[in-house]
Length: 358
Image (cartoon, rainbow, N blue to C red; front, side, top):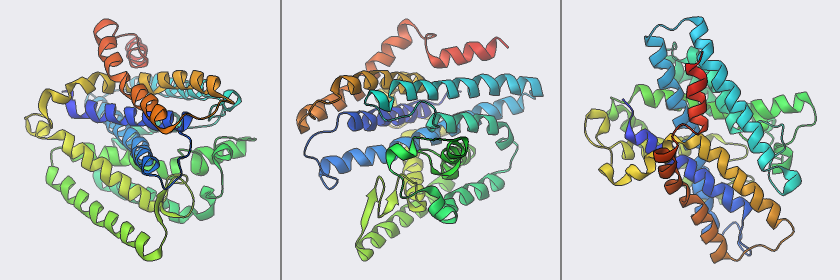
Protein backbone atom coordinates (compact mmCIF):
# COMPACT_ATOMS: atom_id res chain seq x y z
CA UNK A 1 0.00 0.00 0.00
CA UNK A 2 1.38 3.40 -0.99
CA UNK A 3 1.18 5.78 1.96
CA UNK A 4 -0.01 9.27 1.12
CA UNK A 5 1.93 10.99 3.89
CA UNK A 6 5.22 9.57 2.56
CA UNK A 7 4.53 11.09 -0.88
CA UNK A 8 3.63 14.36 0.82
CA UNK A 9 6.77 14.60 2.93
CA UNK A 10 8.85 13.61 -0.09
CA UNK A 11 7.22 16.49 -1.99
CA UNK A 12 7.87 18.94 0.84
CA UNK A 13 11.50 17.80 1.01
CA UNK A 14 12.19 18.30 -2.69
CA UNK A 15 10.34 21.64 -2.73
CA UNK A 16 12.45 22.82 0.21
CA UNK A 17 15.52 21.80 -1.82
CA UNK A 18 14.25 23.84 -4.77
CA UNK A 19 13.67 26.82 -2.47
CA UNK A 20 17.10 26.84 -0.90
CA UNK A 21 18.91 26.28 -4.20
CA UNK A 22 16.94 29.07 -5.86
CA UNK A 23 17.69 31.43 -2.97
CA UNK A 24 21.40 30.60 -3.39
CA UNK A 25 21.38 31.40 -7.12
CA UNK A 26 19.14 34.49 -6.81
CA UNK A 27 20.23 36.00 -3.48
CA UNK A 28 18.71 39.40 -2.68
CA UNK A 29 21.01 42.38 -2.25
CA UNK A 30 21.58 43.88 1.19
CA UNK A 31 20.66 40.74 3.16
CA UNK A 32 23.03 39.77 5.96
CA UNK A 33 23.22 36.52 7.91
CA UNK A 34 21.24 38.05 10.77
CA UNK A 35 18.36 39.27 8.59
CA UNK A 36 15.01 37.50 9.29
CA UNK A 37 14.68 36.58 5.60
CA UNK A 38 18.10 34.92 5.69
CA UNK A 39 17.15 33.03 8.85
CA UNK A 40 13.91 31.74 7.28
CA UNK A 41 15.71 30.66 4.11
CA UNK A 42 18.39 28.93 6.18
CA UNK A 43 15.73 27.16 8.27
CA UNK A 44 14.13 25.72 5.13
CA UNK A 45 17.55 24.83 3.77
CA UNK A 46 18.61 23.16 6.99
CA UNK A 47 15.54 20.92 6.90
CA UNK A 48 15.51 20.21 3.16
CA UNK A 49 18.42 17.81 2.76
CA UNK A 50 17.88 15.86 6.03
CA UNK A 51 14.23 15.37 5.10
CA UNK A 52 15.11 14.42 1.51
CA UNK A 53 17.72 11.85 2.58
CA UNK A 54 15.62 10.41 5.42
CA UNK A 55 12.54 9.84 3.29
CA UNK A 56 14.75 8.40 0.53
CA UNK A 57 16.15 5.97 3.08
CA UNK A 58 12.61 5.11 4.17
CA UNK A 59 11.60 4.41 0.56
CA UNK A 60 14.66 2.34 -0.39
CA UNK A 61 14.40 0.32 2.81
CA UNK A 62 10.69 -0.31 2.23
CA UNK A 63 11.37 -1.51 -1.31
CA UNK A 64 14.27 -3.71 -0.21
CA UNK A 65 12.20 -5.17 2.66
CA UNK A 66 9.49 -6.18 0.23
CA UNK A 67 12.03 -7.91 -2.00
CA UNK A 68 13.54 -9.72 0.97
CA UNK A 69 10.11 -11.04 1.96
CA UNK A 70 9.59 -12.25 -1.63
CA UNK A 71 12.82 -14.25 -1.41
CA UNK A 72 14.72 -12.58 -4.24
CA UNK A 73 17.81 -14.32 -5.54
CA UNK A 74 21.26 -12.73 -5.79
CA UNK A 75 20.71 -11.91 -9.48
CA UNK A 76 17.35 -10.31 -8.73
CA UNK A 77 19.00 -8.16 -6.07
CA UNK A 78 21.63 -7.04 -8.55
CA UNK A 79 18.89 -6.20 -11.06
CA UNK A 80 17.42 -3.93 -8.39
CA UNK A 81 20.69 -2.36 -7.22
CA UNK A 82 22.59 -1.74 -10.47
CA UNK A 83 19.98 0.38 -12.35
CA UNK A 84 19.26 2.44 -9.22
CA UNK A 85 22.94 2.97 -8.41
CA UNK A 86 23.81 3.83 -12.02
CA UNK A 87 20.90 6.23 -12.51
CA UNK A 88 21.58 8.13 -9.28
CA UNK A 89 25.29 8.50 -10.10
CA UNK A 90 24.50 9.70 -13.63
CA UNK A 91 21.95 12.15 -12.27
CA UNK A 92 24.57 13.52 -9.87
CA UNK A 93 26.95 14.17 -12.76
CA UNK A 94 24.11 15.77 -14.74
CA UNK A 95 23.24 18.06 -11.81
CA UNK A 96 26.91 19.05 -11.50
CA UNK A 97 27.07 19.88 -15.21
CA UNK A 98 23.79 21.82 -15.20
CA UNK A 99 24.96 24.09 -12.38
CA UNK A 100 28.67 24.05 -13.08
CA UNK A 101 30.94 26.71 -11.55
CA UNK A 102 32.29 27.61 -14.99
CA UNK A 103 28.84 28.98 -15.90
CA UNK A 104 28.10 30.82 -12.67
CA UNK A 105 26.89 27.71 -10.84
CA UNK A 106 27.92 25.96 -7.64
CA UNK A 107 29.34 22.52 -8.56
CA UNK A 108 32.31 20.88 -10.22
CA UNK A 109 31.16 18.19 -12.62
CA UNK A 110 33.02 15.32 -10.96
CA UNK A 111 32.47 15.73 -7.23
CA UNK A 112 30.01 13.68 -5.15
CA UNK A 113 26.79 15.06 -3.71
CA UNK A 114 23.49 14.01 -2.22
CA UNK A 115 22.59 11.71 -5.13
CA UNK A 116 25.93 9.93 -4.77
CA UNK A 117 25.06 9.36 -1.12
CA UNK A 118 21.70 7.89 -2.15
CA UNK A 119 23.37 5.70 -4.79
CA UNK A 120 25.72 4.17 -2.22
CA UNK A 121 22.82 3.78 0.20
CA UNK A 122 20.85 1.83 -2.39
CA UNK A 123 23.75 -0.60 -2.73
CA UNK A 124 23.89 -1.06 1.05
CA UNK A 125 20.13 -1.35 1.59
CA UNK A 126 19.94 -5.13 0.94
CA UNK A 127 22.32 -5.58 3.89
CA UNK A 128 20.37 -3.15 6.06
CA UNK A 129 17.12 -5.09 5.68
CA UNK A 130 18.88 -8.12 7.13
CA UNK A 131 20.14 -6.17 10.15
CA UNK A 132 18.09 -6.02 13.34
CA UNK A 133 16.39 -2.87 14.57
CA UNK A 134 18.81 -2.85 17.50
CA UNK A 135 21.81 -3.12 15.20
CA UNK A 136 20.63 -0.30 12.94
CA UNK A 137 19.78 1.89 15.94
CA UNK A 138 23.29 1.45 17.35
CA UNK A 139 24.80 2.14 13.93
CA UNK A 140 22.64 5.27 13.64
CA UNK A 141 23.96 6.53 17.00
CA UNK A 142 27.53 5.88 15.87
CA UNK A 143 26.99 7.97 12.74
CA UNK A 144 25.39 10.64 14.93
CA UNK A 145 28.52 10.98 17.07
CA UNK A 146 30.88 10.62 14.10
CA UNK A 147 31.37 14.42 13.77
CA UNK A 148 32.93 14.40 17.24
CA UNK A 149 35.17 11.47 16.31
CA UNK A 150 36.29 12.98 12.99
CA UNK A 151 37.18 16.39 14.42
CA UNK A 152 39.23 18.44 11.94
CA UNK A 153 39.00 15.69 9.30
CA UNK A 154 35.52 16.98 8.38
CA UNK A 155 37.13 20.18 7.07
CA UNK A 156 35.47 22.96 9.11
CA UNK A 157 37.86 25.43 7.49
CA UNK A 158 36.89 24.49 3.92
CA UNK A 159 34.95 27.01 1.87
CA UNK A 160 32.12 25.99 -0.45
CA UNK A 161 34.17 25.85 -3.64
CA UNK A 162 36.89 23.82 -1.92
CA UNK A 163 34.24 21.40 -0.61
CA UNK A 164 32.83 20.77 -4.11
CA UNK A 165 36.21 20.36 -5.80
CA UNK A 166 38.74 17.53 -5.83
CA UNK A 167 42.13 17.67 -7.53
CA UNK A 168 43.03 14.02 -6.99
CA UNK A 169 41.42 10.67 -6.32
CA UNK A 170 42.40 10.97 -2.65
CA UNK A 171 40.58 14.31 -2.36
CA UNK A 172 37.57 12.90 -4.21
CA UNK A 173 37.40 9.97 -1.78
CA UNK A 174 37.65 12.38 1.15
CA UNK A 175 34.77 14.46 -0.26
CA UNK A 176 32.71 11.28 -0.59
CA UNK A 177 33.52 9.92 2.85
CA UNK A 178 33.90 12.81 5.31
CA UNK A 179 34.42 16.38 4.05
CA UNK A 180 32.28 16.89 0.96
CA UNK A 181 28.83 18.47 0.82
CA UNK A 182 26.95 15.27 1.77
CA UNK A 183 29.63 12.80 2.89
CA UNK A 184 28.79 9.31 4.09
CA UNK A 185 30.10 10.29 7.52
CA UNK A 186 27.82 11.55 9.03
CA UNK A 187 25.01 11.83 6.44
CA UNK A 188 24.31 8.09 6.39
CA UNK A 189 22.74 8.83 9.78
CA UNK A 190 19.60 10.02 7.95
CA UNK A 191 19.37 6.87 5.83
CA UNK A 192 19.46 4.80 9.02
CA UNK A 193 16.91 7.13 10.62
CA UNK A 194 14.61 6.43 7.67
CA UNK A 195 14.93 2.68 8.19
CA UNK A 196 14.21 2.96 11.93
CA UNK A 197 11.16 5.18 11.34
CA UNK A 198 9.95 2.67 8.76
CA UNK A 199 10.12 -0.20 11.23
CA UNK A 200 8.43 1.88 13.94
CA UNK A 201 5.61 2.98 11.64
CA UNK A 202 3.02 0.99 13.61
CA UNK A 203 4.45 2.02 17.00
CA UNK A 204 3.68 5.71 17.02
CA UNK A 205 4.17 5.91 20.80
CA UNK A 206 7.81 4.86 20.47
CA UNK A 207 8.32 7.48 17.78
CA UNK A 208 6.65 10.14 19.89
CA UNK A 209 8.92 9.30 22.84
CA UNK A 210 11.92 9.66 20.53
CA UNK A 211 10.61 13.00 19.25
CA UNK A 212 10.13 14.23 22.82
CA UNK A 213 13.73 13.31 23.68
CA UNK A 214 14.85 15.09 20.52
CA UNK A 215 12.93 18.23 21.46
CA UNK A 216 14.58 18.18 24.89
CA UNK A 217 17.98 17.86 23.20
CA UNK A 218 17.06 20.75 20.90
CA UNK A 219 16.24 22.87 23.95
CA UNK A 220 19.68 22.04 25.36
CA UNK A 221 21.34 23.28 22.15
CA UNK A 222 19.39 26.55 22.38
CA UNK A 223 20.38 26.98 26.02
CA UNK A 224 24.02 26.28 25.14
CA UNK A 225 23.87 28.94 22.44
CA UNK A 226 22.59 31.52 24.93
CA UNK A 227 25.00 30.56 27.72
CA UNK A 228 28.06 30.47 25.46
CA UNK A 229 27.01 33.57 23.53
CA UNK A 230 27.45 31.98 20.12
CA UNK A 231 25.09 31.61 17.17
CA UNK A 232 22.64 28.74 17.39
CA UNK A 233 22.75 27.81 13.69
CA UNK A 234 24.91 28.79 10.73
CA UNK A 235 25.59 27.16 7.39
CA UNK A 236 29.23 27.00 8.47
CA UNK A 237 31.41 28.71 11.02
CA UNK A 238 31.28 29.10 14.79
CA UNK A 239 27.81 27.94 15.84
CA UNK A 240 26.18 25.13 17.79
CA UNK A 241 24.49 23.79 14.65
CA UNK A 242 26.45 23.80 11.39
CA UNK A 243 25.49 22.31 8.03
CA UNK A 244 28.94 22.29 6.39
CA UNK A 245 30.25 20.21 8.04
CA UNK A 246 27.21 18.68 9.71
CA UNK A 247 27.70 18.88 13.48
CA UNK A 248 26.30 16.36 15.94
CA UNK A 249 23.77 18.88 17.36
CA UNK A 250 22.62 19.58 13.80
CA UNK A 251 22.03 15.86 13.22
CA UNK A 252 20.02 15.56 16.44
CA UNK A 253 17.91 18.68 15.87
CA UNK A 254 17.23 18.11 12.16
CA UNK A 255 16.55 14.40 12.71
CA UNK A 256 14.03 15.32 15.41
CA UNK A 257 12.30 17.82 13.14
CA UNK A 258 12.12 15.29 10.30
CA UNK A 259 10.58 12.66 12.60
CA UNK A 260 8.14 15.28 13.93
CA UNK A 261 7.11 16.39 10.42
CA UNK A 262 6.60 12.77 9.40
CA UNK A 263 4.47 12.08 12.48
CA UNK A 264 2.32 15.17 11.90
CA UNK A 265 1.73 14.43 8.22
CA UNK A 266 0.96 10.79 9.02
CA UNK A 267 -2.12 11.65 11.08
CA UNK A 268 -4.06 8.40 11.48
CA UNK A 269 -3.05 6.84 8.15
CA UNK A 270 -0.84 4.09 9.60
CA UNK A 271 -3.77 2.88 11.73
CA UNK A 272 -6.20 2.84 8.81
CA UNK A 273 -7.43 6.43 8.95
CA UNK A 274 -6.60 9.55 6.99
CA UNK A 275 -3.31 11.44 6.87
CA UNK A 276 -3.15 14.90 8.40
CA UNK A 277 -5.54 17.31 6.63
CA UNK A 278 -7.08 14.45 4.66
CA UNK A 279 -7.32 15.16 0.96
CA UNK A 280 -6.50 18.84 1.28
CA UNK A 281 -2.79 18.12 0.81
CA UNK A 282 -3.31 15.56 -1.96
CA UNK A 283 -2.08 18.11 -4.53
CA UNK A 284 1.44 17.53 -3.15
CA UNK A 285 1.45 13.80 -3.84
CA UNK A 286 2.36 13.90 -7.57
CA UNK A 287 5.40 16.06 -6.73
CA UNK A 288 6.40 13.46 -4.15
CA UNK A 289 6.17 10.68 -6.70
CA UNK A 290 8.34 12.75 -9.08
CA UNK A 291 10.84 13.99 -6.49
CA UNK A 292 13.96 12.79 -8.32
CA UNK A 293 12.76 14.22 -11.63
CA UNK A 294 11.97 17.57 -9.98
CA UNK A 295 15.30 17.57 -8.15
CA UNK A 296 17.29 17.13 -11.36
CA UNK A 297 15.05 19.32 -13.55
CA UNK A 298 15.14 22.37 -11.30
CA UNK A 299 18.91 22.51 -11.71
CA UNK A 300 18.42 22.93 -15.46
CA UNK A 301 16.33 26.04 -14.73
CA UNK A 302 18.81 27.35 -12.16
CA UNK A 303 21.73 26.66 -14.47
CA UNK A 304 20.16 28.86 -17.14
CA UNK A 305 19.41 31.57 -14.56
CA UNK A 306 22.96 31.46 -13.20
CA UNK A 307 24.36 31.85 -16.72
CA UNK A 308 22.06 34.80 -17.48
CA UNK A 309 22.76 36.54 -14.17
CA UNK A 310 26.53 36.12 -14.22
CA UNK A 311 28.00 39.58 -13.77
CA UNK A 312 24.56 41.14 -13.30
CA UNK A 313 23.60 43.02 -10.10
CA UNK A 314 21.56 41.17 -7.49
CA UNK A 315 17.80 41.58 -7.32
CA UNK A 316 16.28 43.51 -4.45
CA UNK A 317 14.51 41.64 -1.66
CA UNK A 318 10.93 41.57 -3.00
CA UNK A 319 11.74 40.48 -6.60
CA UNK A 320 14.20 37.85 -5.34
CA UNK A 321 11.59 36.56 -2.87
CA UNK A 322 8.91 36.36 -5.58
CA UNK A 323 11.24 34.55 -8.00
CA UNK A 324 12.16 32.02 -5.30
CA UNK A 325 8.55 31.35 -4.26
CA UNK A 326 7.34 31.13 -7.87
CA UNK A 327 10.08 28.71 -8.89
CA UNK A 328 9.36 26.57 -5.83
CA UNK A 329 5.58 26.51 -6.18
CA UNK A 330 5.40 25.97 -9.95
CA UNK A 331 6.60 22.38 -9.61
CA UNK A 332 3.38 21.41 -7.83
CA UNK A 333 1.01 22.06 -10.79
CA UNK A 334 3.66 20.86 -13.24
CA UNK A 335 3.82 17.52 -11.41
CA UNK A 336 0.02 17.22 -11.42
CA UNK A 337 -0.17 17.88 -15.17
CA UNK A 338 2.78 15.59 -15.86
CA UNK A 339 1.24 12.69 -13.93
CA UNK A 340 -2.05 13.01 -15.81
CA UNK A 341 -0.53 13.48 -19.28
CA UNK A 342 2.81 11.62 -19.35
CA UNK A 343 3.31 9.61 -16.15
CA UNK A 344 5.99 7.35 -17.63
CA UNK A 345 8.16 10.18 -18.93
CA UNK A 346 10.28 10.70 -15.84
CA UNK A 347 13.42 9.45 -14.14
CA UNK A 348 11.24 7.39 -11.83
CA UNK A 349 9.50 5.86 -14.85
CA UNK A 350 12.86 5.16 -16.49
CA UNK A 351 14.02 3.37 -13.35
CA UNK A 352 10.87 1.24 -13.24
CA UNK A 353 11.23 0.27 -16.91
CA UNK A 354 14.92 -0.54 -16.49
CA UNK A 355 14.26 -2.81 -13.54
CA UNK A 356 11.24 -4.52 -15.05
CA UNK A 357 13.16 -5.31 -18.23
CA UNK A 358 15.77 -7.37 -16.37
